Image (spheres, rainbow, N blue to C red):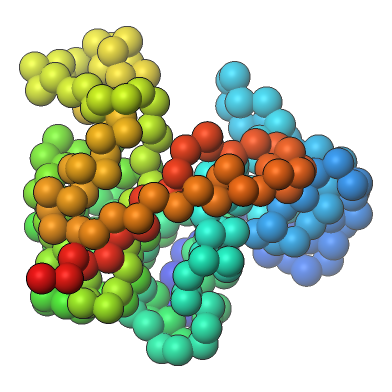
Length: 252
């Protein structure tokens, strides 16, 4: 699937108002204000909208970004080389609507979306057995995926394998405790919902996530962007209160 094919799929899946220039302007004007700001679509807003039960005022009405998307976008723009115009091969696991249209327009990116089942994915795959050659990608982004994967260590080693020596990998997961908790004997959806907080989660990650990545071979830098934003964090309506795990290949 080419980037052009991907755009057609996205337009079929996402409501028309997010792609029509006229309706986009209307949505921006209707929601204009100075209390909130979305850095992804660069829109000043009165407020964000609710996303689901218990998630009040968290979704951008223009580009549909959530809190984690806004934080990651700022990280991409402020602290990485993603937008420097140099050609890159970019693997996006579990592609989000918020990002796909933006990345697929960037001609300097060879942008590949992948997932086990998502219709937004160009390639359907298992992250524990990636169908790519060694040292293929310059950038890998994987958001809120590894908490769903029973053998996350195998997946991490696969990401390490397909990453170029000078490339980088950003795995974003919810960090909710000090030490990761998992129990492979818990397989029922209701029990997983009760124990892990979601019926398709298989663990709750802790701050030892860094060690798990290092065990797969990565050199991991904890980036404190979430703690550096000050007033911007309020206008974005909060960000995950944790560091981002910026991974590169360890120098051997």
